[in-house]
Figure 1: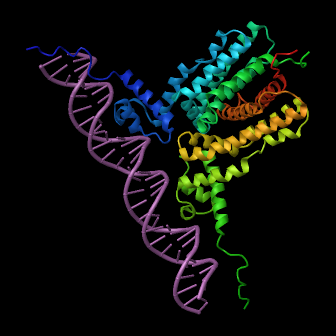
Figure 2 (figure 1 turned 60 degrees about the vertical axis):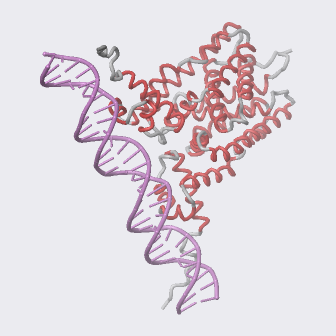
Figure 3 (figure 1 turned 120 degrees about the vertical axis):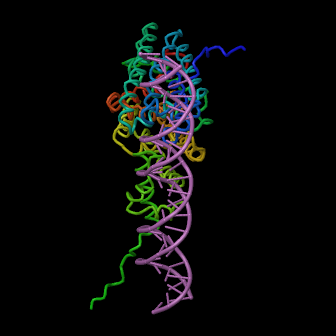
Length: 212
Length: 212
DNA sequence: GGTATTCAATACCCATTGGTATTGAATTTG
DNA sequence: CAAATTCAATACCAATGGGTATTGAATACC
């Protein structure tokens, strides 16, 4: 009778999607369990495949990790810091940015943990470091540009923007780590206060000769 | 003839020393390779023993890690921050502390990496977190007290010392992580400048109503 | 339609490694 | 001095998991 119409969509998952799903699953798994404790079988299962799919698309576990890193690198850049330019007034800019970052740290489960996992591995794996270092530099650079834009708009003679960018970038990562270790002791409120205070002090206070 | 005198010292290594050496070796190994990648056999060999010594002194790998953590906790407290009180003048205090911390980060190979490894594991291991969180609080508290002492001595009306303590503590850790990822981009000089700028701004600039 | 090719699933391999059981020398005890 | 005990060394085990070889269905090609 109604013979089944030629399968409108291919029943074999397109290669690109297989890779996407594997990378996504790997990112989650790495973030949750860490690289060494993640099993390729679990990653594959999470993506709806088996280990065969992994080795059909990636040469090794390390390469899969590299793919995750590369994938995130593209999307990561300037996710938060650029918003710094969208607020007005020193207090507003600091407070607004602080709230954004605090929310990111306390709310997001994967992004921050994956970032820490990347850094953790970069310490020992030269190849990871080679990929991650430029990415981090870009992030710092974007932060610096945002800082420069704000101070210029406000006419404030702030400190070296690149230095402030480094400070904010590292403070953010340090707070994320501290929050992971001691969530109650370092909650969103404290994080927000810390970033706001730092930004306010750095953007408003730098007068080379003291306060005339 | 000369019968060998009764061995002046026992030829069997005292238990306490076996444990000390195992913990020390484990700390080095964990710092270099990370917990998961560290082999008990390597740790034992590094201490001059075999795996048997490990299991004769510790119940499991996790417990050995716990012993390392506990051992370091005792010595860790207030290693650097207390010096903050020993310098004079806002600029001097900031610059002196910055130099100390920068040297610690760039020079020390084990302490910083072990700290990051602790944090990394604390994220996923509740028991590790239970030990590490109080330690971190103490570290922050000591930093806060040092800040309070300096500001009081200088008569400066600085921001909430505990908040500044949190900021400095997290900035330090963040800088250490960034240095590990990108040693050239974030060298000792930049680290020193970042900490000095932050301390100067935070200790000197907090005037609730602006600069009269 | 038939053949070649792609690619994930399946079955399998084996080196690694945390952990255990046993041993035997060094100490302690009586 | 002999028996009991301590404790690290040695030998061993079982599970784990990254990686490989093979298979068979889906797709592409002619």
